Amino acid sequence: MPDRLAAEITELVGDQADGWDRSGLIPHELLRKMSGRGLLCAQVPEEYGGLGLNSAQGGELTARAGSLCSSLRSVMTSQGMAAWALQRLGDAEQRSGLLGGLVRGRLAAVGFSEADAGSDVTAMRTTIRRDGGDVVVDGVKTWITAARYADELVIFGRYEDGGAVVAIPADTPGVTIEPVPDPLGCRAAGHSHIRLDEVRVPARRLLDGAGMPLPLLITLVLAYGRMSVGWGCVGILRGCLAAAGAHARSRRQFGKPLGEHQLVGRHLAGLLVSEQIATRACEHASALWDANAPDAVTATVLAKHVGATQAAQGAAAAVQILGSAGADNSSLVARAYRDAKLMEIIEGSNELCQVMLAEHVLSRS
Amino acid sequence: MTAPTDRPTDVQSAISAFIETRTRTTPEPDVDIFAAGGLSSLFAMELVVHLEKTFGIAISGADMRLDNFRTVDSMVGLVTRLGGRVDA
Image (cartoon, rainbow over the protein chains, first blue to last red):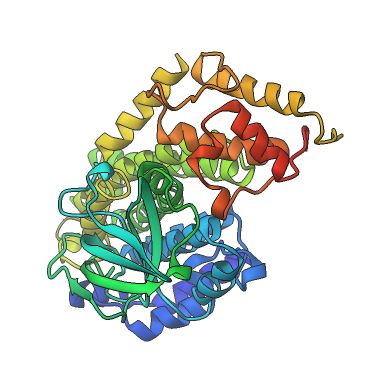
């Protein structure tokens, strides 16, 4: 089944990714269609109407999307994180209703970051408070992937002594969504700022787990996002490898194919090594995830970090190999170059991943 | 091979052993392991996953509260309440 699904995504994207990057927009109908097919969060269990892929299969599907269009793959990461949050924290009604909606055509975004709370989630200022049978949400979220397209905003905020997560319909009064006009990468991923002014929703939209420490809630939900970004980076590398290989074989300079010039060959070898390293790190983390092994938590951070750094390095090499042929700003390798840089920043920057991995070493020493 | 859930000491020793290998400290059953600091959110997540796998339970929704994970005793309570089994 995963192969058929990957082929379906390839067909849906076709040759449109360059244009989406240029216009900064993926057609809404296409995203709705993919949601309705369960393709945007393919790991949703079948009992909720999802495709029920495991992490390894879902990862390969994510990589396929990432090899074609990182904007689309980012939308999948957001939808998948929202689904994971609802699955892990939602009660039975929220799972069948809200989670089921995400495989029936609805789109979702997840709101963590704020102007003063990027890596430091403890600085989060958005508040969620009970008011009778409702909850009221106030705050401003920044750089929220897919918010431009979303029907459902899964928002993190302070609640009593800890944190909470609430699912807010994007058309609720008091919600303002303002697209980021000119992002560096994943330009069609719908990055937006979200203003929440006295937004009131029924308390049944508050997910369970309310009052858990914010860092724990965020770690729980980000784990899915990190796995997804890692696989997305594998996709970036596969896309770059295919483009660079084809170019180095066909383009001739100084009387022979580019790839037979050793300095160019070295870039090709490096790209292959990067793709393999990232793939193995993601496969390992997904295998632990699917085995429900505690080590999956750290392996996920490692896979994201390895994926992002290898993709940034590999995409830069691919642009170098293609030269002017890859210098059109929306061409596959140019997009990869800009998109991969963003992957070193989101879902835990390189530096934050390193801090977490160092803490892991220290706690075991 | 499964053991009945009415043997909380087995559950307790399995949880204690896990914490010991991960933190290099032996936890007293009623001491808040997060109070001393130094334990990351990643470790908390590892605990959640470990309990699910080891005792064959699914922790979700309202059970996802830090209070359920603060002490070995509270984790034993959670596992017992969710019908967890050793060697599940």
